[in-house]
Image (cartoon, rainbow, N blue to C red; front, side, top):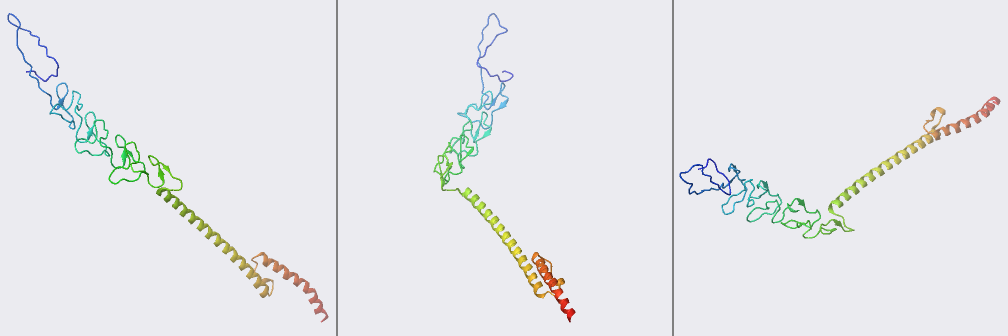
Length: 246
């Protein structure tokens, strides 16, 4: 019995003692490491290594020799298959390199189904909208064309673009309405102020009992003051002469 398991292809026996001449018979009873690896079978094979015909699941380096099971991939089957890989009835959804075997789901494409389908692909009930190269399977939504529906057709606007356009139009309309209201209010205020000034001048002319009765609020009022004062200056000499004769 050997003190510990040894992995070898050949066994060489070298006698060290004998009687008269060297002669012997021998046999080697080997054993398998089964689910272990290492020079002394001290490591356990990775859990997700597949086993074919109940053989050893991994080599001396711990690499799974018959692939993986349970939706895992990698040399030691320690990586889960990509989320968007399509399921299989039997076996892992991806191979040992992580490539999805049955295609993709959830509107993704690529060897590992990591790329989302083009936005403008026409929907497909229960299946991905695009094939592995990213080509839209059922064509494009209204307003777009091309293998990946990346080119817009003149005269059509996508729903998202249309929404943005409508929002911009509404905002512009609101700004214009507010500007018009402000302008109208300013015009009304200026017109009202002008009418008020004219009323003051008219009342001053009709009710004037002297210079103190006028309200000095505008240029027109000042001109009224000037006209009335000139008339008074012209009238006063005649009044004083008539008063003297009397």
